[in-house]
Image (tube, rainbow, N blue to C red):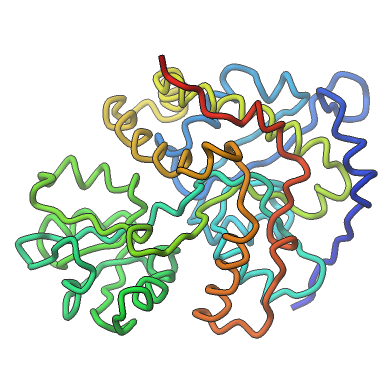
Length: 346
């Protein structure tokens, strides 16, 4: 496959372009168009993006942002690499794999860490013998989509738990059917993003389910991040910085009071239940605002943690090339640390 190769501006030159508070397309005050792909459908997980849009934060930064639904956190990467979208939400481990398979100057980089910890969980039915111990999954039937991050990261948990990666049987299931097969009892457990399981929690009682978090198994993975095409980073880093300022502003406001973000999201999807989506954001917030963010702020990473993730992904996925952490993540366009701190509730 023929590859597109993009080249970066020198760091000093890029930094000097970030000072302007807003970015406009040629021709005066016309906003710069930008296409952003979500990782999945619209719901409370990504409500801050819709707050930024509805309150005009993107337009204040000189951007005309179009937000589209996604087809999975892996698909976001290929959408951006193809040039159809300039930015989006996508999984860090999948980005490691993509860059390893397309060596050289990266086509896509992470620029803001949204999920500071991946919200990967397996949720099991207690009446099928699934407990809080991952080893209770042995011999069970676990539903998962064919290509999804939680399923693909399972071997990392198996290693930490001293289990075989084939300890249970996968049953390939569409995302939309996952709740149904769990409720009917067709499977014993299913993979989820923790916040995506709110719909299941509405149909089954909490005491009927065991939630096994990958993070509790000692698997410290960064989850979905805001990604940008390297072409955009090279040609107009101010656009990326402007998008991150507006989005970060909305994320911080959502931590302080999520209700306006949920209302903004429901302007796009009125059918969604406000109470359920508030509950969903409550779970999302645990992973977006994980412990590390109390030190370095939202959006940032610990380089050592990312390097360890690259090592683990390369080993588990059998990658022949191991990308550097600098090729995966570009922190140069983040808002200031003070802007990225989670507000302390009174």
